[in-house]
Image (cartoon, rainbow over all chains, first blue to last red; front, side, top):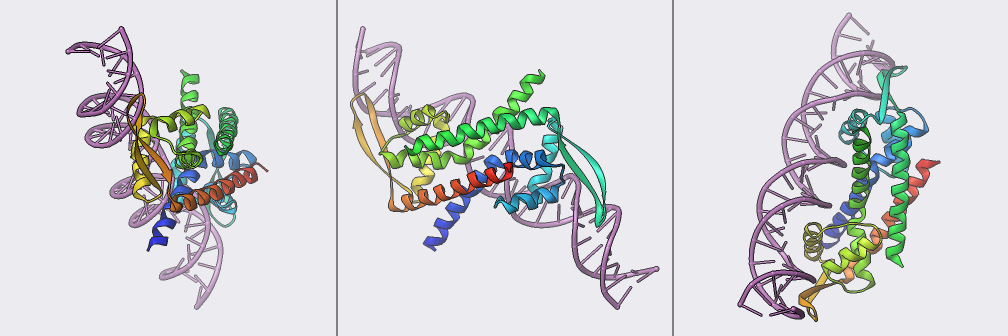
Length: 114
Length: 114
DNA sequence: TAGACTACCTTGTATTAAAAGGTAATATGT
DNA sequence: ACATATTACCTTTTAATACAAGGTAGTCTA
């Protein structure tokens, strides 16, 4: 019971950290190559960043509406058509900004440990 | 107007990242030496992690209620008494868990860049 | 003794991740 | 050809929480 609560708090802390970089992580995935929602989820899973559909769809829409992403429909050989997302020029600039912020965050944590 | 929106989005992304590590950052500060709310705010400010009172008080209470922190009142030479926080044994274990998660997050981002 | 300063805390609001549920297109097995 | 499974899209509701704003009280100084 005690251990369970502790683990729950730790899981929550992990979730908080993950949330913080989610947008950044998604942009990194799309920057590498055009992809669609389910593939992004898999890619993030591979680096231990679990995200679910209910999270990613609204987020992709938000990024699209902000002009950071574009998409085009593409047929699939094994299922319904997919929305393939790419970065816009604005999205690339935004990603660059995120990288800077990420570095500054890494520096901040490193400094706090000193 | 365009530039303003862009900057707003970036600021938002920065805020998200900051939020994600806030709890971790606060624990790191307290781990170094016992401190009180306003001093924590200053310390975080010094490493470019801006936090305000309305954020930190509820958070400290939460951590206290979870058994991760303790506090004791101490007189001040220049103002009202202060609540000095320290890590409990459980808090130390929790912090260790956070460090592990942070490292795994750094690894995740590094992998996504490859 | 009035004002400034420092410290504590609470309430209301907005954002947003995640849970849960829903629609539709294609493929597969019988 | 029809039912089922799979893959893909999306929306609605809920809960957590950072921050803005506002409030109380102790201490110091002029």
